[in-house]
Structure formats: structure tokens, C-alpha cells
Length: 249
Image 1 (cartoon, rainbow, N blue to C red):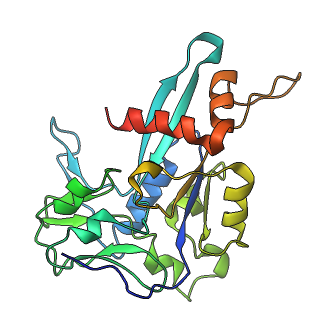
Image 2: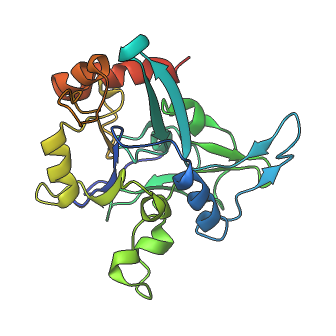
């Protein structure tokens, strides 16, 4: 089995996703597909995309759920990709060392030259973040666009993952979650950002921001009362447990 870095850097690059303002437009998924089709893990295949059994690799997927009833109802859009866990089960079960976690920034990657396509990593990942490429016979996953975020030929403002760059409502943020003073860490602290399935103790680097409480004053908009109350309690604990149940169906 594969070992994790013995002396990892405190730097933890990752995403913060605001569930309050995500509109489920899928722009993040589409731009992710476009960039990575020529990026670090290219190509991302699409087999029989318009047939009865389409098989394709998508690093970012968006799930939409209906929650609540009547006036308390709300559509929740939940983007899902690799969470680059501090204790990634996908890495620990890999028999060849193909799945690994980088010591310098905490990003979890796959070395396709070592991958035998056994799918153990996909079975171990509770978040469904691993993708099997039926064309190459190997596993693929989100890389946080390492070929973009470290590309010194780009302006610094452009050195962010494709999904972050394209989000039309600013629901996705990128930065160092190992630095408590970074913009993303302050955002998590201020909004009660939360881990997905914290009880599993994989300690995801990526965080989710729960919906804000409902705004009831004239002219205001916001989350419906039922979801707003849930999202505001325990740092979003109850709300994200609800999402966990939806994803596991």
C-alpha cells in the first residue's frame, strides 16, 4: 500500500465552495473538462456521449437536490470533486503507488504510468471523486489544475483552477487552507465552512460554505427559513449531513 508524505509542508492548496450562491450552471464542470482535456491528465475521454451508455471522465460534477416543502423549499446545487484529503484513503489503498499526495502542497494526484486500473481507489473514496477512463484503462481525478496554478507564463491572477476562473457568481475560491491568515481560511472561519463527512476523519482540505439564514426584510433575498436555520447551526453540520445522505442514495 502507498504511504503518505512523512514530513508534509503546512501548505494545503484547495477549494472553498459557497453553496449559498452556487446556481448549478455547470460552467465549472465544462471549463474543467475543456482545460484538462489538454492538461496534466489529458485526454479526458467521452465514449458514446449521446448513446444509451455514455462513458466519460469528468473531474467536477454538480448534483442538484430539492429540499424542504412549500415556501420552505429550495433547490440545492452541490458541486463535487476530489477534496484532496489530509488522510486520503484512495492513496493508502493503492497497490502500486500510482495514487500519491504531494508533500509540498497537499495535492492528491495519479501517476498514470504506475496505474493498473484496479479501481481500489474509487472503492475507497467515499466522495465518489475518482474517474475510470475506459479508453486508457487508468484512474483519473481533479489535479487542481497544477499545470495552470504553477504556470509562470500566466498572470498571477490567472493562476487558479479552471473551475474557479469560470464561475459566473464567484461561488468557488482557491488558496492555501493551511495558512489561517489566507483569504480562503478567513472565509471558512467567517462563514462556518465545513468538511464533507467529517465523521470519517479523512480531513478534506476543500471546504463547503453552508446556506445563509433566510432574509425576511422587504427587498431582501436569501435561503429559505428551513435550510437557512439548518445551515447556520453547528457550522453547517446538519445541512451537510443532509447532503451526505443525498449523495449516498
